[in-house]
Length: 215
Image 1 (spheres, rainbow, N blue to C red):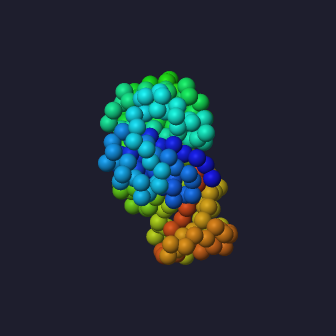
Image 2 (image 1 turned 120 degrees about the horizontal axis):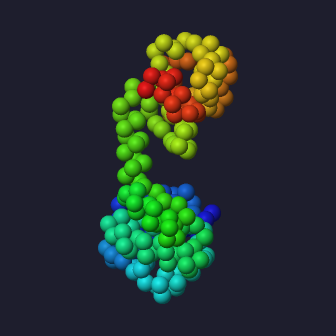
Image 3 (image 1 turned 45 degrees about the vertical axis):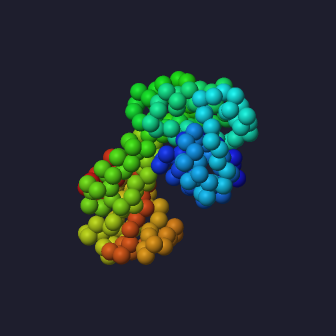
């Protein structure tokens, strides 16, 4: 279990706080808006009203006691930048900051952020891939070149085995699992038969996957 500080309780921040809490971690959420803090209390249990650009206030939280500090301020970049810088100065072990643009990401990384997330950019790419492809049902980027895709089985594959398709040799793509009726099966054998009721979780280079599934 980790101790996580989340600063900024807008829509994104509140969702992050909720997910972290549901994963079983300790969460302290902070926002200068009293209404947002009150709304978050039932979700995270521990939430404080405070100005994260105030060094004295941040210092009172014991920043070096948190495993992760996440700055999710989205509407006030100056506050986000100041908060990020102060967190690192006060001993933040891992400081993750939200950016809405590439230029913001650069400034945040130069001023204390260990990592930067851009939720709008990430969900935009996911949406573009998901809804402009016939076979793609889900997508997780691993790095600039590799990803995991959940794909529908092409009609011409139905009835064939993994060995017959041989996509690992042809495309360098690994079939990690099959999924049917919401149930994941991690045992994929050469004689596993493709059916129209299944989907596949495949891992490989994005270009190879796009070529294999005609994306």
